[in-house]
Length: 111
Length: 116
Length: 145
Image (cartoon, chains in turn orange, yellow, red):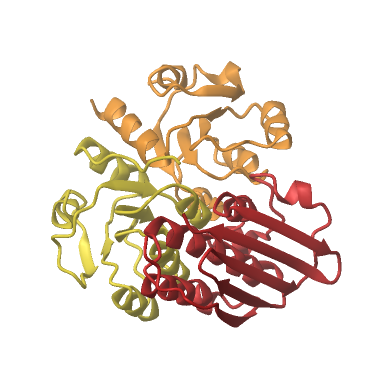
């Protein structure tokens, strides 16, 4: 499955890095702790989080994640979006909670 | 959904169950951010989290969370377990990650918490 | 709703900065008191959440604080005066998602920039006053229905 394939079913807003929507989704990781994502996420994963700290961009870059989904309608600060755009990290937002976003993705990936 | 059903779906270990496993859970919230647990309407919910410190139990109590499941086989220490016992909050532990735990419960029909 | 409040009930707590172990003591006490008085559950939850977030702010940012609550037949007032660094730009601090919390706090699940907005959300009246280098005072009023 490609990153672009999950946009519509999850009604995601693509905020940055729309040029990477052709990348493959290798899996999903859900966490709000940067150290946990550094330790346990896998290359090409989509990361579901409530975290909007500037360092999420660096973590996504270092772990070569396919994208970040910021959930529960949280506001992503402008400096985070600027950095993500500059580093070609795809940041998406949704009104859905982490639980529901994970649930829907799980159904799509294992259907 | 009862806690018993949830424990079965998550192949979870029951760490403590002060009120038995017949507790009814109406929704779930997956988070490590404790303010999010406090921000969204979560009573009668289960919290799925990777954090195991005592302040997680306190947050759950204040937010009206019914039960907590720790992911990736994370086990709380005795102080945390004792606090949860006092607050009558059952604790479970699953080897699944937050994504898989959320996915399995969502698939089984458990809704997410209300955003409010 | 019949409340068992005929007189003013108040209590004070000393909060110590950095002490995660006792986080939530004051909010738990307040919650118990309100339950005992037969206050509406939604009001109790709002008061407990607002107080707990205030306690966490003291633990994360300040050296110490005094938390004082007053319950009258009409409302609950919670006032927290801390000895902390103070807030330079209150408007910015009130913005959802803005936080100056250090990394170790974020790794414990706090510092999401939701604390002050959450306190305001759960209060009917919310006042914040801060002097850089001296401390911050927050006063929250929650009215009974």
